[in-house]
Image (cartoon, rainbow, N blue to C red; front, side, top):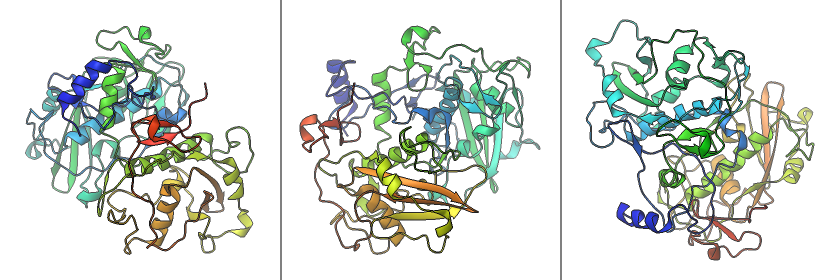
Length: 496
């Protein structure tokens, strides 16, 4: 990483124009926190500074909930300057902010929530405020008998994590699923057991938040404050229906004049500032995405009979490329820092492979549904609710991936099913994947193909180390001549 001074000079030189290529805008909410509530960018860079952060490849991502990031309890100064005593560190503060803005984005994108499809709203992104975190401060000795929200403070409690290495953030653990967000499509009023959550974090008047967390006994407690007008009656509309922002001219409130076109929220940061914040997420773990099973033709062209939607196909591709991105950016796995791959290509979906992986329910059972040399297979009990994408079940966290940096082989201690899954995802020769998913009786099954073997000796090298791309000239394989400088991977030129 370069120092902030170098990055600043690059920003001055490049401004908002293309440094290497016009990447897409991801619309991340990760950034550093100030005591006044203003969130400023944490400037870091890789070898080349992309003009803008690349966009998520999933159009429907704004309408789905995902699992919590992992974060151990940690006492860190808010914004590195203010001691509050909270046991949620800077990373957890950022993830809390990210989660809130993801929920707000649902209001801007006609998402189908618990009471049906809602109308669009023109809302602002929320900033983190150290002052509000201090205002939410509590001690274990003065906990109220009932840890419930009141008019000015949002409260939640959950059992203490048994393992700090796998602990997930308390805010995500206590947030509602999509079907639990009961917002009336007709008058935008809220109801249900998560009414307090929606008023505190999704109201259109909210622009700042601060949360304080602490372990007391065997439980984790969290209290949050926002600048929501607590005098509003409980039956007041959550927001006023109007079109989401599509351009900066749609963002008219002071200090929030930049339209984040990906989320539809009015932002206080420019696209360049967001890009620098996103650079800090290059090694992030994948999430479990909660997506209902819905059968759709493969990209509206091929009827395979699979029980997955195109959004789910997109999310699988996003996850595959996120694993490849980790490998190509010297991220840390269990056995050390990984080495990059030259000409590492992004993977895309193949309806042909999906069709080829097809199976018949009458021929499968959990006992016989096993992977073979060229097909990855996995099954689990079907979930009637809170369904997560089965491709990401038994997820491979960075803390579990055992690739030897010295020779790029899998460590012998790595379970066979994990090494097969990783070989399917990370093999450099793989450029396409297709998966057939189906619920058969009480179980859900998925089979995936890439056109390359997944069962090979663990001693066989996964890839030959090289260098991530930093410019289009580094991408020399046919059909993949464009360098995505955020991920360090090569991709096809965009079709205009």
